[in-house]
Image 1 (tube, protein in one colour):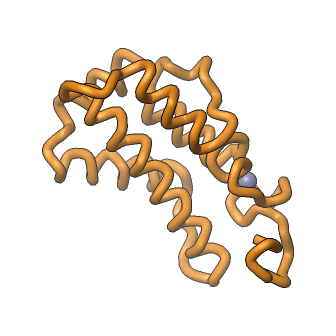
Image 2 (cartoon, rainbow, N blue to C red):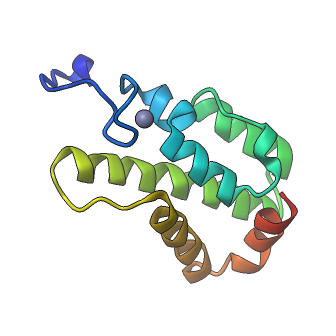
Image 3 (spheres, helix red, strand yellow):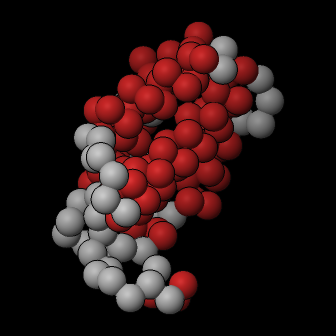
Length: 126
Ligand SMILES: [Zn+2]
């Protein structure tokens, strides 16, 4: 954020512990990690190092083609986007959502887009 000229605190607003970096937000932040674990079920032994690493992992595990691959990419993109939205909401003083709320929103989004059946295989199988 400092690279963008931001003058405020560089502490992550999601965990209030670490220095906020892009890689922290989408990999090591405890807020993101809990969401990731809940959305990717038992695939919890994997921890993305950054956004690209996470997307590569999704592609490696679920492939490029087929419904499960599409569901995996949708979950990944949704968790990134809602994590970033939550980060911005907190940074600008809006209401805070806990990670359970974020997971519910991602699952609802997946359901509304019609991918719940395939996503459930990922959530359950893990
Ligand atoms: Zn954090």
